[in-house]
Image 1: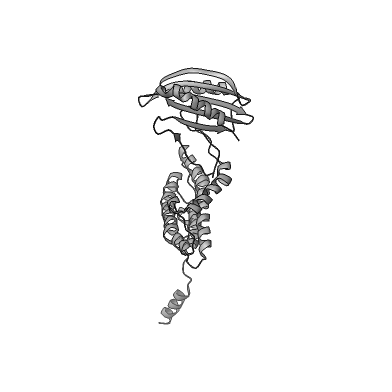
Image 2: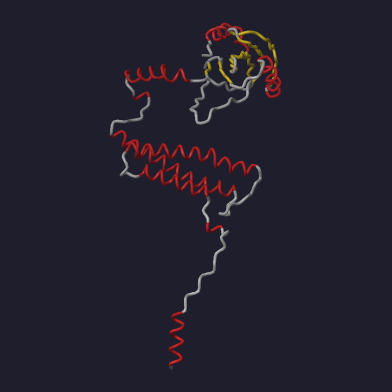
Length: 296
């Protein structure tokens, strides 16, 4: 009987066995760093959702959230996409491949952006309106407010606008990172006549050479292309070249002329186009546009 009691005491006093050690390379021990970053930005969004935070601070946190997310997509998501394009299947300590990480990021980002949008439209905007700060359309403005908007545009916005030409006769232009870009097409609704203006800070050495190169590629991709002329010239004292040509698009025969010129480090291009049957009548308009154009 005494022996049994002694054995029971020994059993009770014996230390519990330690659980088996987990290998430190087990993926369940680690969190994906990109998903962890999204959790951090989630906490920024939570500050914007917190009604105890002052209203304008909440608006600022929404802006910080959006700015953070822009940089995250441009840098980290872009890096993952590069890995997928290169066929790289390297897995981090979390065990996720680049494509699996992108799928999880996409699901998480959609939820976050949806929350951000709802917070701005359903909470922040009504609260701002209650304080006399409203986002309105032009139709909701009176004449005095519209005049102030026009003045601000003419004095502060218009001088900062830089036109970039987009069209079949030139490569897609460089769009500056994080800049606000507006797509505008100036076109006559009746005749279809339009003017496009483009510039580049990496021009070639010769406007004539640039047009000759573009003429070859343009002719290979457009029906009924006819190069009428490529002539060197000058424009307001700058080296320039004119490229006149015709082609058809959607069954309509078009006539176009491009004027390219160099102003030191910048290259400019004016592209004027109209229907073939309106070309003779449009020449005066083209001359007027050229004469009134200023690169400054």
